[in-house]
Length: 534
Image (cartoon, rainbow, N blue to C red):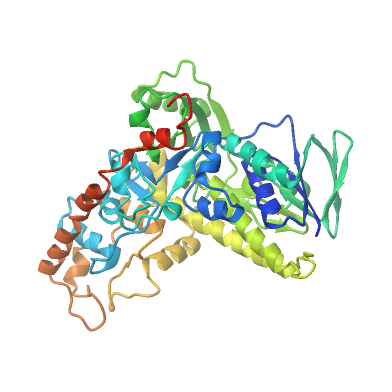
């Protein structure tokens, strides 16, 4: 393998190109981009795992943020998913459990003792960065005064995805010698054994390569249209397949530039709200099986108006989504990255997540297949199979995680939410993931508790926010709630002490963050200090 051809630009194409030119400088990398096909450009939110990929290619926040209209992100807020009028956060950090009895399960003891405790209190009780989120502040915590908050591991970004792709092109790819061709694909010649033989372009060029990477978005020009790799739909548990997107101006940056993505459930889906430096991105993700596009647009506009937004001059983009993944993301000499491989839906900002996760796996595969002496790369079918298994498992686990936001709802006020409430989910991935995270395989009720929540990860945050509690009064009364092997069961008095102790944490977090600047002020005085807006 010497010549790699990437078909498609956008964030997926340029992230792929950046990864390869940084990790495998011995490869000849060419990116072919259509001058006529618009970039989707609405993937403006990431999760904390993006920093793993940033580390891989050697990029820091100060390098790209100003050029991409970026802001920081510490959490995702979910409004009206559990019940109308209730919300909770999923913060990107580690829970503080140093003074607990049963780890994060102490909160479920608190909920049992004080049933009126709001579900949002789970994040407030364990995650110190929630003090930043709740006060609309930001800090990198370089002095470690905010416990269990590590900037590089707990922070993600909001940015303009189109600008991010262009920044990668101009600052990483082209300086490294990548060949960039702007032309339409005219014809793709296949080979029964290899897969893709060559690609003929409108400008007359015929390009041959050893590895072709499909970054053509939902068109999936190589993997789907050419190689006909079957597509596995996930609509059975993720019904949303369309979205209306638009951009709105700020009225008050100090208040509206929050360090989190806001997700608000409506009657037939949910609305994202993403604060960038110069404007906000927002969109309504919905199911066209429950509402027409025209009705969804009106519902979206009504929501925006309720927030004080004048919709008269806004431009709305209609997006169709293909929810699921190809049976194989590496087939013969073709790899699919981004939307061409698969897509879950925008909830939990997973679009770019699968891009950088798949790229890390691709790098590891190529590295294992590279000879240490002359750096030649030869990929066996076994290596491809392992890659396919790994990426498919990662995708299914995240899809299950997203499905939980609907499966655990208590809403039944519209047909859409009633269908979510009554939908039958595939028990295999759902049970497998819940059992791994909640400990079904490791703890029985005779040993500890029925649903033990592990210390980190998104499942406990979402489950607790959606009212799915690990400990309740029934478990306590059975006498099977222990602090460990050989210990006595927890009395109600002991449970109350645990609950009261946990209640002191939010005040500690707030005290530790008093010194911090607002999110807007932090950005204004650091990243955008030379900007005219400053």
